[in-house]
Image (spheres, rainbow, N blue to C red):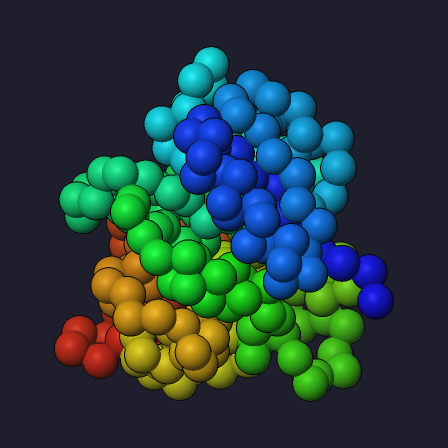
Length: 232
């Protein structure tokens, strides 16, 4: 079996060495960069199964790097975990809105880190066990072979989590989905406890890409006190 590839971009040499050692012991192939510019060169020159970024990086900061990865067709679908010493709600939201799939505040335990890596590596429930190559709703179309989304045959650039969210909604059209249900089916059954606002952030970003007017959404509606409903 080919080892899954992880790119670590972190300027703390001791931390990156410890993380790399632990990940290699788990069977992953690990590549490292000590600054954002080097991380960008590596991210766009090879395909990775996961990218781990520190926010406070020299040369090019992690938030900018995250956005650049998400806007690059070669690396846009790679899951991203952000590491940071800043743990306020605003910082977390900024990180998630930059395209991160998960956010870990320093200091953290290696056990927690490895658990979150395993979650990102596992294919989501919404993308398993179904033989469909495509799924459509109105002018939206999902291509599961290439993990691409289209609207009126124009590609919509989605992050990994946005694609998984839209898949879940389109497979449950007109059903009200709670935040807990969404977390379980997109982030995974054993996902560590996180702020449910993570779901809200990702849905807001998805709306910006598939709604004509994201401030007055008609495709993904909010059902107050319950969750969200996709209406096609």
